Length: 164
Image (cartoon, rainbow, N blue to C red):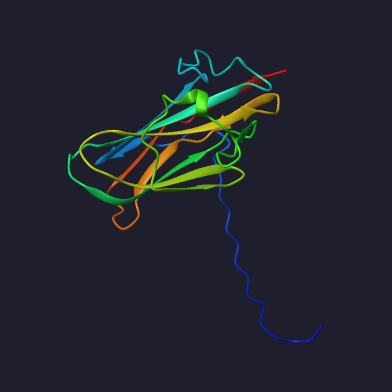
C-alpha cells in the first residue's frame, strides 16, 4: 500500500541447459580427469554406479612458463555427485595424491582451489561420491587469474550418468 520506489536485484547463475560451453586456454590450461581410489582412470563417465567414490584430478599448467599469482580454480559438480569433505575423510591409502593448493573452499555444488602457478604443472585432487542416479550436466573446470582477466582456461564440460 502507498506510493514509493521499489528496487530489486536479480542474479542468475548456472550451466546452460544445452551444455554448450566455450572451451578456451589463454595463458593457462586446466584439465579435468577422473580416477579410482587406486589412481586408475575411470573409463566411462556414463557408467558410474550410485555409491562409487571417484577422485577428481585437476591439472593446471602455465602456457607462458612465467609465474602467475592468485589463480582460482573452480570445478562445478554434476548434480549427482557430492564432495567428500577432505577435513573429515582419511585418505592415507591415496598417498599418490600430491600438489595440493594453498587454500580451498568447498561448496554444495563446486570446489575452489586458490594457488599460484609457475613453470611446472600443478595437480589438485578431491573426492566425490556418486549419490543420485540419473543423467547430469557437468560444468567445465575453470582457472582464472583473479587480478588479470586475460589469464584463464575453461575445459572439461560433459555428461555424467549415475546408475543405481
